[in-house]
Structures are given as C-alpha cells and as structure tokens.
Amino acid sequence: MRRRYWLRSLLFAFSVLLGYSTHAQVSDSLKHRLAALETGRRTSLLKDTDYLRAVDSIAPHLEGEDSLPRLLTTYQQIAFGNPALGRWRAYYYTYLALNAYNTNKFGAAIYYSGKNNEERIKAGLFEKGELAHSDLFALTLHYNNHDYPKVILRLIALAPALGRVPAAISAGKTGPEQVFLALSILQTAVYTYAKTGDSAAREKAVHLAEDIRQRVRQKPAPYTHFASQYAYLEHSTAYRNELSLGHLRQAQDWLHTAIRDVESPDFPRHLKADYGVSLYTEAVDFYFDHGQVDSARRYLDILHGHGDNAIYAVTDPGFLLINDSRLLAGEGKYADAYQHLRKAWLLRDSAFFAVSSDRDNNLYAMAEADNARAEADNARAELVRSEESKRAARQSNLLLFFILALIVLGGLSSFLVYRARQQRRLLDLQAHLASNFHDTVGPMLLYANALIKKESTGRPSAGLDEIKNQIGQIMESVRGISHDLKSSRLGSINGLGKDLTHLLEKIREATGIAFTLTVENGNHLLSHFQVTHLSKIVHELISNSVKHAGCNKITIAMKGLPRNLQIDYTDDGKGLDPAATTNGGIGLGNIRERVASLHGHLQLNNAFPEGYSVALSIPLL
Image 1 (cartoon, rainbow, N blue to C red):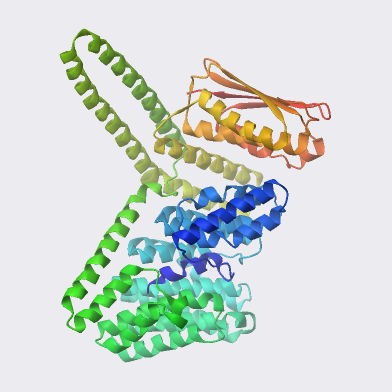
Image 2: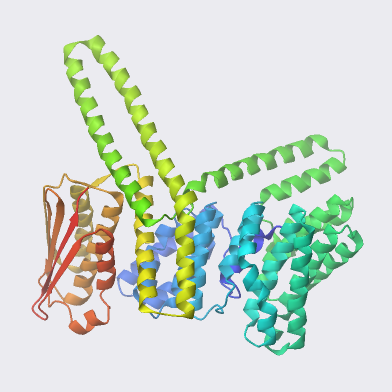
C-alpha cells in the first residue's frame, strides 16, 4: 500500500490542520502574507497568539518549500518563549517534519516527528502510552522507501509493547489512540512480512491484531469514536493477508470493504483524502496485476483528481505515468506508452538520488561522548592546519611569481593540485567522522538515553535525572560538532561583531535604543558551533534589554585574548527584576546552557534597579 499519502495524517493525528502542495505563484503570495504578518507583529498590531494562528493557516501550504524553516523563525521564538504555548511548539515540529519529508530529508523527518510526538503529549493533544505516533511515522516512511530491514528491526523493538496491548484493554488501562496505533503498526507488519515472504511473522501479526479487536468488542464503550478507523484497519489488513495466501476473490472483497469504510459518512472527513488515495492506488495495482483493466482504469481516473475527485489527486506523478503507460500499451499505443514510462523512470531516478543524498543529513547521527570530543578536536586541528598550509602555499607562489614567469606557472599548477588534494583529504576526513558518528556511536547513545528515560519514568531519582541531563548536553555538543563538520568555513570574532552590529542597527531604527560595540584582536578564528551559540546568547541579552530593562543604550565589548574570547555586556537600564530572574522569564537558563556547551564561564552582576552587567569568557580554537 502506498501509505505516503497519509504520513501527514500520522503527524497531525486527528487534527484538521492539513496542508497541501501549492503552485509557485501561490507560494510567493503566501510568503508575502507571512512578511506582512511579521510587520504587523513588530508594530504591535498583532498579538502573539493571533500571529501564531495566522501562520497556522499559511504554513501547511508551504510544506514543500526549502525556505520554510527560515520563514518559521519568529513562530519558533514565540512558541518556545512562552511555556503556555505548548500546542504551537507541537505545530512547529509538525511543520518541520512535513517539510523534511517533502524535501527528501527522511532522517530529519523521523527526528522531528519524535519531537512532534513529545510536544503533543505535553500539550494533551496525544494520548501518552508505550506506543508513539512517531513510531508509526518512522515505520511508514521506511516502508514507503522499501527499506524493509529497518521496518522489521523497529517492529522487533516494538513487539513487547504490542504484546501487552490485549491485556491492557481488558484491564481498562489503555485508550483508543493506543489501540489505533497498535492496529496500524500491525497492519504495517502484515504488509511488510507479505513483501518479504515471512509467512510465520505475518500470521503472528494477524492473530495479535484479531486478539486486540476481540478485546475491544468485549469492552466497546471507550473505543466507539474510533470504530470506523478500526474497521478500515481490520479490512485492509485482511485484504493483504488474503492476497498473500493467493485467495484473490476474498482479497478483492476485503479491498472493496475497506474502500467502503473510508467512503462512509462515519469516517473522519479530514482523513478521507489520504486514506482514500492509499486504497485507490492499491486497487489500481491489484486490478492491473490480475488483468482487470477496466476496473484499474476506473480507480486511475479517480486518482487523476478531476472534478469531484479533486481531493483524491495523487501527488506522485510517477505513479500516474506508469499506470497510464500500461493503459496505452493495452490499447496498442506503444510509442505513447514508452514516452510515459520514460518520464516515470526519469522521475524515479531523480527521487532516488535525492533520497541517497540525504544519508549524511540524518539527524540520528549522534555519538558517544568521549569519542565524539576526541574526533571533534582532531577535526578542528585539521581545519586550522589546512588553513595554515594554504596560506604558506600562497606566499610561496607569490615569491615564485616575482622570480620567473615560467616557474610561477609551474608553481601555480603544483599549488592547485596540492590544494585540491588537501580539500579532498579534508572532505574525506569529515565524511569519515560523520560516518563513525552515525554507524558506531550514535545508536549506542540514543539507546542509553531511551533506557535512562524509561528507568526514570518507573523509578525517578536525582541521579537518573543528572545522567539524563548529561546525556542531553552530550547530544547537544555532538549536534554542534556535526554542524562544524558540515560547515565549509570558519568564522571570526570580527565576523561575529559585524553580525551583531547589523542587528543593533535595526533595533536602533525600530526602538531608538543607541549602542556601542567594540572589537579588539578580532582576527581569532571561531568554529561554526561557537559563532552560532555566541550569536544566540547575545541575541537573548539584547532581547532582555529591549523588553525588560527600559534602557537607552547598550554597550558591548569583545576582546580576543591569546586563549579566550572575553565579552562584556551592559546597558543603562534598571537591571534584572529578581522575581523575573527566579521564574526563568528572561532566558538566563538558556544562556547558561549555551555557555556550558561552549565550556565557558558566565558572571552576572545584577544591581536592580540600578542596572546590570554580564561578563562572558569562552576558550578559543
């Protein structure tokens, strides 16, 4: 079954915030609307919640745009800046997951679906249980990509939780969403084991699903609202099981029953399109495979999405081209059939390339702490040595240029070859480090984090919480290391100063707050990780000054020392309200975490209401 069409429904679950692809002209118009909303918020014409709701009406329609994460920057700042806005934090991760999926960044899609699941549980939008919507999302994504080994590995990991569902239903300890997830995961298991030919595992999944449904029938009251979804899952699973057994007549009957389930008025309206498309594509393949061309044509016409069938339009042009070519070939129009088939395979080739190129973008490329730190130090040292070698080579070539023209030409050629080798060596090293993170250390660290999380849920303790926090810091550090490895250039103190000056100039234009920013010894190098976190730290301090201090001037002094970068920040306002500081409303907790990740030191001198100053020091490369 082509379940790609209801991945969006897995993220939103039973919400109605579904978005669809749009044309480039409409996309540009929506981006202009976002810009207008941003202006309205800056000028206080829009409240934060009104801004968030307005963006919610636009973002789903831009889920295929590469620029969507950047367009949602303000949305993210608002949602994560207020603890009461948990619903919108979940929506933010939903948009990122859909964007990653639609741009073929499947590792990122799985990561963001997990964050989406966490935030929706916190906000009360998802039911908390052993089975997560993110598990079903990952299974479906791997199945769509025909990566059956990964599907089976995840099914094996979920087997204990699935096995406990029947008893939990009988004991009244599981809700309707958990039952829906269990039946959906078992449906994926039946389809996967049918594809791989594992009849024993398929039969086991079928029997477990039937046991769950039987327990629901014995206590139907809590599950009535989900009856139509349960019926669809039962009948579509039975279809695939009978098809695997070679019972074509029974399989066809179950397929038609599943289609009637989705077309029924009782089936949730916001799920009809995605689930209907999956069943109609299955019907096209079934009838083509068994020589019933007229029936295949009927469902293919629906999937073309003309007229009343617009909601069922398939977004995979390759599927339509392949099946249209089958119809043309059946009519003897072989030249037209060939052209359709050629276009389809060109599309599939480009999609395969996009999927393959995403391997290095997998956000599950975490690493074990000691190995990660050692390899990161080697990577930074290699970057510095490479830069020094390039500068020495340039100086040698300049000297040769003034000695003899012919020698210059030869030296230049040698330099270009040398530089190419150095760059290749650096790229090879970066690829090697990233591969080690992904294949060796990452899974162990993630598994350790999952064990600690599970253990702390059952038996909470301060020691486990500290271990969990340490693992979180390790993962943050490794994420920064990954950014460094992917970055093709280093930053500098001067560059950071220019970026901050540009920001302060905009603030001066908007608020009238003056500023002074000085940089001494600004040629020292900064890594991508350092530049990113220092920029966010100073942004937070500036934000506090603008929002809370009531100041007229901000003063920042940046000084590069032999081993450290010193940043002194002050404003002429009233300082930090101790009550606000205690409640964490000014983001000091975030600042301290970022300073810790940079292995630096932070000193806050608060003399409320007479003002405050901040002294920050971090080690240089």
